[in-house]
Amino acid sequence: MRTPVTVGDQTAHINLDLAGLPAGEELDLPADGETAVVVLTGRVDAAADGASLGTAGGRASVFEGPGDTVYAPPGTALGFRALDGGPVQLAIASAAAEPDEGAPPARVITAADQRITEVGEGNWSRTVRTILGPEHTALRLLLGETINPPGNWSSYPPHRHDRHDPPREVDLEEVYLFKVDPPGGFGVQIRYEIDGAEEAFLVRDDDIAAIRAGFHPVVAASGYSLYYLWVMAGDGREMMPYLDPAHAWVQQGR
Image 1 (cartoon, helix red, strand yellow):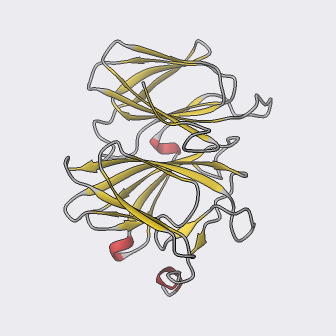
Image 2: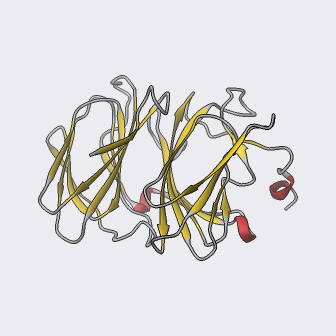
Image 3: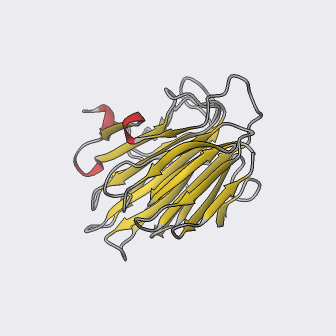
């Protein structure tokens, strides 16, 4: 298991681990904070505190359609066994939270449970699969998947969510996990502040961006579809992004 994002290093709230399992191999996750395990590819048998949750997953690629996610409230141990049918890749997102009698139960979140929408238009249109949104019962985590068609932008018009100023903005840090189709392609992640601080870097398969502050648009290179898993946690579970006033007209004018 690889741990590219750790609270106290890249983030204040979110941990992200990645695991690959050959058929028959098992993975046990200890009872800890609130956890969501996204089955990126392959199929697994899943269990919570030893009780079966059934089979999760089944897609060969994140680009073929929405997949399954195994959710566990704080204090719940999870177990997985990889099944035949292709390599299993898991993205394990978690955030610190105390066990709560009102917490939702451990469960498999299927494609039918997700909110799938087409967002934007023209060269800033993209598909957003909301796995665990504000409308879904959870304690801290928000997460989903975005697919940029070749050459298209997302997280656009540029927005930020690093100040707690509801109803204008809610402070949520965010982590992205990227994948590219066909292999060998890339996208570009941009981060900037209104005061002029800025950076841009290439993102390829399995690259990570930990976004604690600033506006953060993403673009796919021409010829390549760009996927990213997004995970958010912070002050509450409302999604209130603040659009960069210089570019908000792109959305508001339509």
